[in-house]
Image (cartoon, rainbow, N blue to C red; front, top):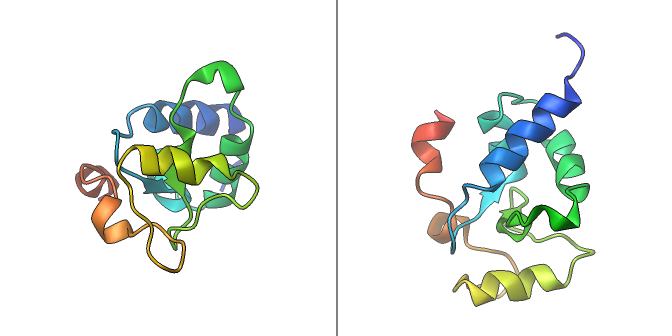
Amino acid sequence: MGKLDRKKLESEVYKIVGEIPFGSVVTYGQLARLAGFPQCARMVGYAMAHIPEASGLPCHRVVNSQGRIAPNWPEQRALLEQEGICFKTNGRVDLHKYMWKEISHLDG
């Protein structure tokens, strides 16, 4: 595999994040696959952590593969709840219920 094009990854990830609909979530791994970097879920996490605040992107709609929210971002849960996303008793988002439905045909 050649050198990772970080700028391209960030650009693709940010474009996809902007398309996540209200009331839906996606995972870092799915974002990596959709952006064309299937082995780079951690790099997606890094890109998400460094999105400029003024971007206006719905970053709160991205969760980990178990439906967990970012540990150092307490506002994320409130933002998701404002969109009607409920959490299970274990504190995780129910991915079967709230996963972006359109992602299945994009994700292959």
